[in-house]
Image 1: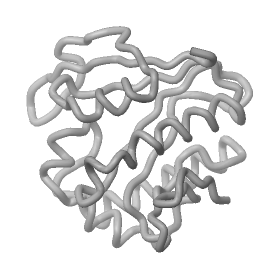
Image 2: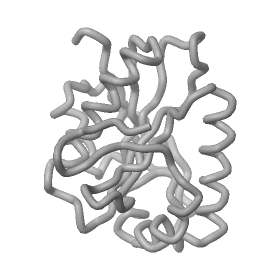
Image 3: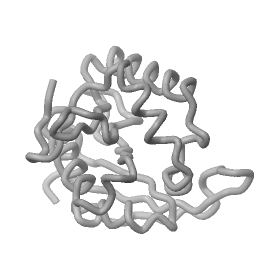
Image 4: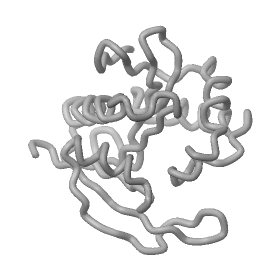
Length: 177
């Protein structure tokens, strides 16, 4: 499976051979500081657990709903996918995404999120896609806004991290908007 985003990147199935790249790229404090669920330091065990979740979810859904973001040389540079839905039964899902730091600020994630959402609307039958973003992660919020998402909520002390509770912004994109 390959979903072409543009001449720079494409989406493909996550592979077990991606583990070393996951550990290398996600073992970055700045990525940890901007995300809700990525642990730090990011270890082999964390990568193995995530790969197992992706494999299990693919089996349960009957098709991939999480993808590797790969550059033109087919190297893993990030990931994106959908959670909190059941294929054929749910009308909404939550998108999550991450990109290795060397690829930030190049428009890659905006293009990926646009393509992933279009694919999910067409192939998964969704009518609403949501995203949760740390309140201080302005870059991620901007990606969503460029893709047509609108902020629907602001949840104070919503997510536990580092022994405290952090604020989260909820964004949503509706099919046809």
